[in-house]
Length: 301
Image 1: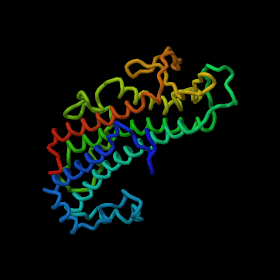
Image 2 (image 1 turned 60 degrees about the vertical axis):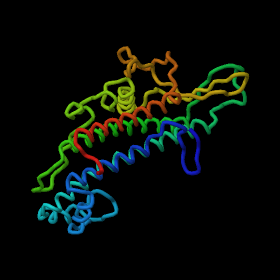
Image 3 (image 1 turned 45 degrees about the horizontal axis):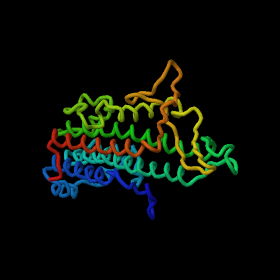
Image 4 (image 1 turned 180 degrees about the vertical axis):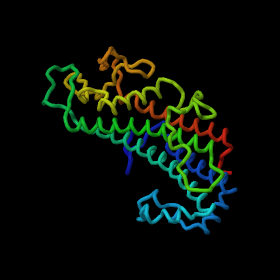
């Protein structure tokens, strides 16, 4: 991973721009599906007050719930349809934001790990040894990692919601209601037409299980490590490598005995496996949306 003028750039495996393009394709496809074409969607917007369809979604409109409710109760079909579309669009937008967030967190993680020195003494105790460091900087590094896995898991929920909503697009607009996918989470993937198909983020495979497992550890136990540590390897009194260990895991599940689940015998280094894990996640997201397009006929054309 290299540092560019404004951001960190992945030397390979960066699919964020492909996901961004796919999000726009899905959004345009929904417009065509609901309004007949993308152009007809924009033509219809001329007759719908934009603040009515956008309020309650973004912070650039300072309108209260009490102020909008009378308009929603009296809304005609065109307004209700536009409001529904904007709710679907906002769902897709949430995924886009989370996608950018993961790339930013990934860059911050490697920047902090690579640019900081964790040497506590002028020279290590022995010329060839491994030692670890903790403290404020290490805690900050772990905070990037923790939130990264939380965000990845959230994206799995978002993708499940988007897939379900687009497979059940609303066609009758008599009143304003919540999205049909409001209660859908990643665990509901079997309710999709392609279910947990191979190559999707819903496939029961080691990488996707590991993301969910680490997220659960972070949410329920605060971290996947009892005390956050960065390890440093010295050879001939020179630090040659820095790394963070992941707990031993098998097929995406952490190896455990009762309450003990912090085993580190396999030497799994997070900083070595993280890029491949996230690239695989992005590939699976794109595959998922390709299958969604096939199941719904939704495209930008």
